[in-house]
Image (tube, rainbow, N blue to C red):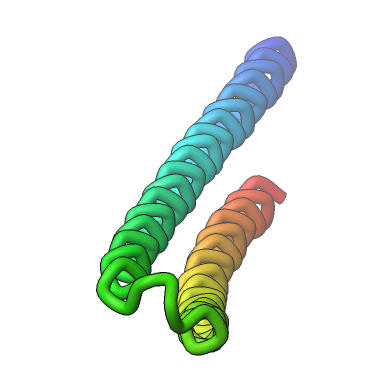
Length: 124
């Protein structure tokens, strides 16, 4: 009878260790996939931003060609004004996207941590 009790304790410890390992493995997998998705989203935003800047540069070149080189100071002022407007708008848009991205990452980390804490409580 005593041997069966001890054998049950050993099997229970093995099961508990396995369940703990399994839970840690699943959480690590979720965290890796979340990091990969966030990195690809940031790359997409950077490509989108580069495309917008190229479009604006082509537009500015077209207008500069229309005005010609006779009106140098006017062209300089227009170029500077357009650059300032574009840089401010893009910066703000990128900042909004960046904040959204970081908020999503934080929520995912909190969710994973909450799951981890719940698993620890169940095992305790």
